[in-house]
Image: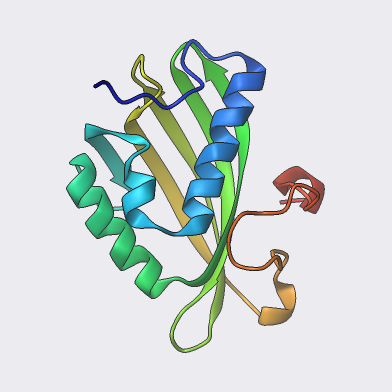
Length: 156
C-alpha cells in the first residue's frame, strides 16, 4: 500500500496554503512519530547544523527538540510555490528550562514526491531571546486557532 498525504503536487496557491497549514498543525501537536509520517522514508533534512535522514532520525531529532523547547507554538506562512516545491517563512516561541523565552524565526524550502510526502526539507533558523511580556503566541498548546493572527498580521 502506497502512503499518500494530500494535497498532491503540482500545487496551486490554495493547495500550497493547505499543505503549509497541515505542516504547522502537525508540528504544533508535537508528536514526533505522527509528524514523521508526513515525510518520505528516506527524507533529507537540513535543520540548522543538523542533517537528519529518514523517519527514524527525524523522530529522534524532534524528540530532542521538543524536550528542550518548552511551550512550543509555531506559525508558518506560505512564501512561494511552484510544481512540487513550497517555500515558507515561520516563527515559533518557546522557553528553555531556565525560563528564558525565545522567538525563533526562519525559512524552509520543501520538496514533495508525487504522493504528497516531503522528501527534502531545508531550514534556516535564528533565535531571538525575548521577555515573556513580548510573547505574541498565547493559544493553548496544540493547533493554532483559525482566528489567531498570522505572521503578517502580527508584523513578524
